[in-house]
Amino acid sequence: PSADTFERVFARIDPKEFKACFIQWIQAISQLTKGEVIAVDGKTLRRSHDQSKGKSAIHMVSAWACTNGLVLGQTKTEEKSNEITAIPELLKILEIEGCIVTIDAMGCQKRICETIIEKGADYIFSLKGNQGNLHNDIQLYFQSQRESEFADVSFDYHETTDAEHGKIEVRKYWTLSDIDWLQGKEHWKNLTTICMVERERQFKNKTGKETSYYIGSVESNAKTFAHAIRSHWKVENSLHWVLDVSFREDESRIRKDHAPDNFAVLRHIALNMIKKEDSVKKSIKAKRLRAGWDHDYLLKVLNA
Image 1 (tube, rainbow, N blue to C red):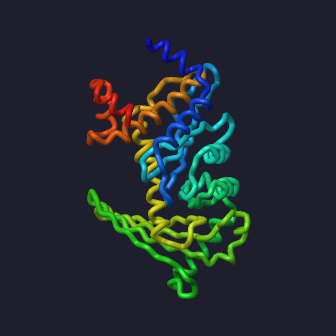
Image 2 (image 1 turned 180 degrees about the vertical axis):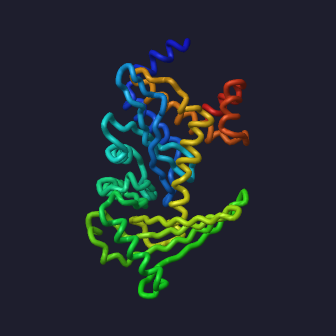
Image 3 (image 1 turned 30 degrees about the horizontal axis):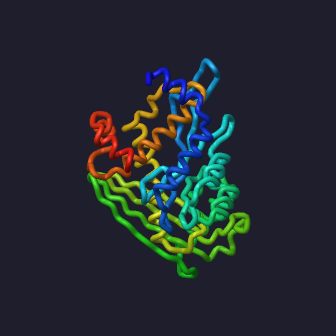
């Protein structure tokens, strides 16, 4: 088919039906293990806007299975809306029972945690100042406990050290489940544990420190929290970065009708297929090129 035919077809396909087909396909070819981390995050397709029609760039929220390395599903945020409304809709159509869902501070919402628990999963949310006094209360509590070296409370601790390219990063994790004192705790479904993470980075002669706070429905296990928090960044490194570099998504000028939504799903399909085909140990970009040049390898990718 010519480029014009592709344009007409993908501009007219109902994106909701196309996404439903994607979900059914990915559930048929993959199986999530108990405790797998599902990272949920959004990405704007920067050139999908159409100024002549007053259409802003679309923003897609995706769910990434960190162990399997696959996109589980995606949904577009509606006009004049944001991730807060899109995330529950995405979670409702996914099979995530027994998994741990991680979301950054934007998605730290009561409605979202309820949806996750209703789906039989657990959650770990990053905290910032968008939840009233919740962040400040947890921050002050951890600071006071840190000063007393956690002498009066039961806690769990885990520490990791990474060293690469001349940079050393030490991460310290504390988790506590003694949170009956926390105001508003009852509004967060199954809230069980709070977590503090201290990160210290050394590069050449410079040292930087950063402290973050998290809430979760997972039992107080610092190693589990450390794994989930670190895994969350795979949605940036293994999905969003790959879409931009290997698929050049941000450079795409596709913008007519439903075509931007559908091509976003199409890229996710292609990425999942390429990642599942493991007979060739090359980059995503190199495997895409080979699939375009070698029909035998293309059939391997399509049958992966």
